[in-house]
View 1 (cartoon, rainbow, N blue to C red):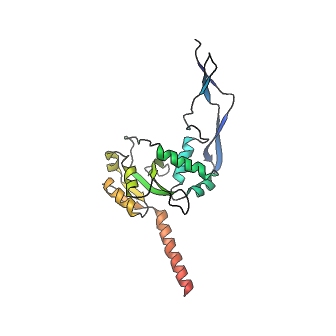
View 2 (view 1 turned 60 degrees about the vertical axis):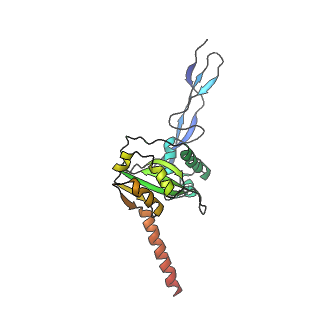
View 3 (view 1 turned 180 degrees about the vertical axis):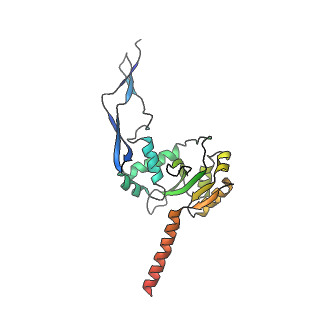
Length: 215
């Protein structure tokens, strides 16, 4: 019996990667495959930097998920030049494929935000983010809902030691998130996301403006 051997395809694959200087960039590579020396059957290997049946790198997916914080899929799609359906696929995949959080990961600051999948629709998810390094936030988990149960569900993925080490947790003004984080973070201080503070101030200013206009 002849042995199988590994070689590279003559065809190249082009997949979307992180932007460079605010311009789209693409990763071009030749996928390796194993060919049976007996029947010539080819089995392609999945690239370690992407998942199957997607045309973007894993880090591009991660970046898109982080952009959904304080935004919607339509806005992120327009900003990144991709379809809203593609973004929805990223979210659904992350919600169904639970990725365990490394128990040895040092986490001192976290963010918990709701993401709206569609404008004017009650389709929400909660995204848990590691903000220990604010310049490089990392998505820890994405799960359905935006209530206290959703908040608790995500935080339970952190170990007891990790939750005890958290110093600050950033949330919006939702009482559900406040209740969900109170028991989970015994040594952490809640920080209201400045985006929501500015949003509330803008609503007050707009209300006063309309009131003065009617006088």
